[in-house]
Length: 142
Image 1: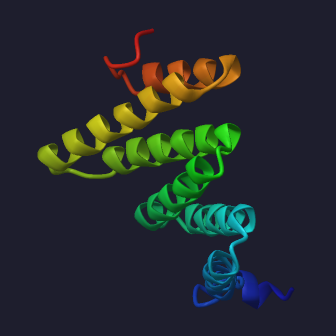
Image 2: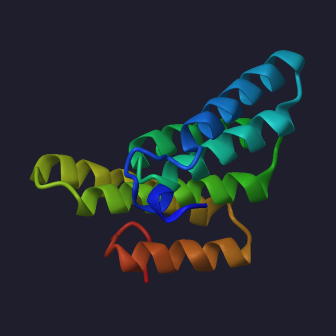
Image 3: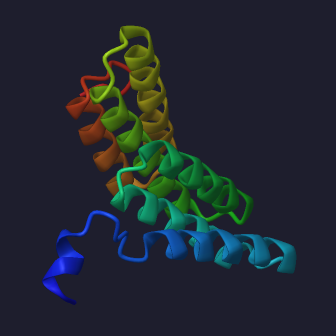
């Protein structure tokens, strides 16, 4: 890669096409009845959105991944999705100035961390407690 490509702000490093591919693959897998691949495609899409700081869109993709994980009874995947959603909502709350919106985001983040704690194994519960405490959430006791 040339130095000019690294400094060119119009270069998205292929994220747009990768996100479109992940969305298309998720749709194709859903139509084909391949739920596990559909879920992984949504997870991939969410990670790509995270990488470009499109946190709201990432949350939407993580929620789709969560729905698929719950449908196929993938508890580890569901725990991962719940954690990612909670963390993203917390980060989004730190970036807004509107107090009402900030409070809603923090409350929603707490709910996802609480669900993560309730549905996870011992390791997941540990992570959920840490994330809940970092965000000063009262719903996940420290």
